[in-house]
Length: 248
Image (cartoon, rainbow, N blue to C red; front, side):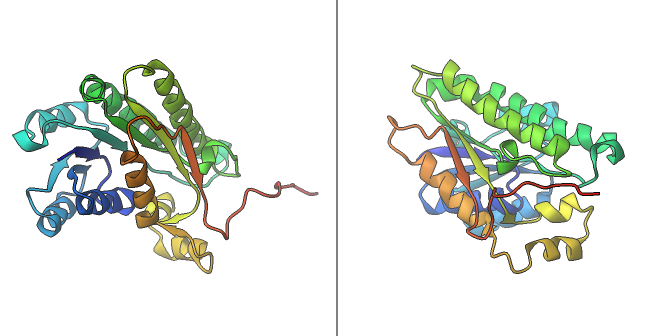
């Protein structure tokens, strides 16, 4: 039975991945900061199928301790899903909080790179897969996207460069780049204001975390000689058409 490690498994895409992978016959290690949600997933999916690791992905010492304590049946990882990430604020660059910028970089870039580096020797040994969750913001800039878009562009390019370095090892690397997905993402981005988040999604028929999770699972289950380099998804209601024009 193959094993996947999914970061940010306590909500949204990561939570969807945990359910989808277990349903498809995988074991899942789910990481997250909310122990109660990890416990709930274990109770739902079964302790033989899901193991929760309660740590912030930015905390390398806690990460290493959790990975060192994995039960034997979960110790060999075949797929890393780097899902943990966030956006903070929609302010214009000069009005943004620098601490928000640093938190996005530390979470979306530094922690992702660190987790990948930690698991790469095992993934090379097992000819595994790495699926990084980027965003359409990696390719299409928008007002207020500043550092968030920059971090996701890094994830996309890092994925492609990893793919180059890993050529010949059998390790597959994919950058998944979703558009509008209705999760807790916008609540976090708007400092917990659910009303603002709900208004953003209202009437848009956005994608769901489960939609993206099924896509991640499809990539992970492909035959070992196939690699999806990048995969961009949007709800039909969303488009990259048109440019913002500031008028006097």
